[in-house]
Length: 382
Image (cartoon, rainbow, N blue to C red):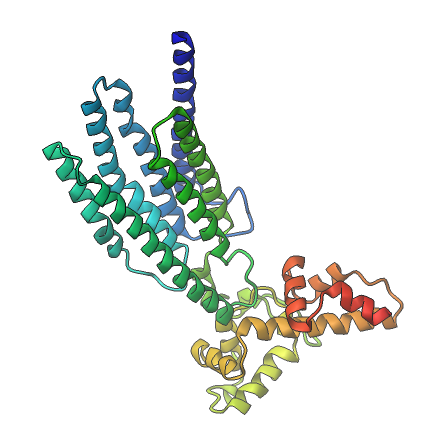
């Protein structure tokens, strides 16, 4: 029995150390590797990489300052060690986790000082418990911690919805940009960790908490590497494939492309409507992948805010406007292929219509046409 306990303890120590080493390795990877290994074609936000690295570093340190618990012999020493660890966690790990959620949202730079204000009462209270060796008020801090988590969750739900609206007002393609799924997964992981943190300190708890850490590290690495840096897309530069009868401008040319002086400063809705038709619809600019509203605004001689407001007055968004043009282009290609007795491959036609993801095309098609692409094609041939 005693030997079995030693083996279990040794195995857990190895598992504990493996989680700490994984966190340290992930931290060094994000700090020192510039290119993405998971998604080489995506440029991830530098700010997010740094804060995620800070979170991994704090996770590594968190494993270190809980080590003295293994050498404590009395319940008082164990309690003091846990209090010290909790204080240090609320000074490093918890704030980094909260900041990490905020910096995933790239519509604007949100102030980070409220995070410090939120965790300060817990740090002060736990420090008082440690100094006076009194844990009678710990339930109050548990309750405050729960309220803080609920408040953060409510704020993140609201902020993520605003972020989604911002994306649809500014970008034609949302691949590698949306984060609500990631925030939902992270919330579940952190919730599981919190439930374990308030449970009994059994071996099951210990193994599950370390497994949770490993899952969290792997998931965050994937999220950081696959999230596109939107700060690079506000004054991006038009390369060129076909533009109407000639070429479609590419992103790297947009910063240098200027419309004729007579097209600048549109003053009426009809003016803007005509300029969109002239510079977007007729040359089929919507086939350009990931063109932003700022780029299109420059082409028509206006600004991003004015153009976004124009789409709002039309009861749509920039994202819906571009994708509707792409769906109409898909329909045109479909009818051309049928008329020429050519084989029709929906996925291929979707890519030719400006979509990079067939799943995105399918969702947009159903939303636009009110039916699935398969059902629509069957109806056309039926």
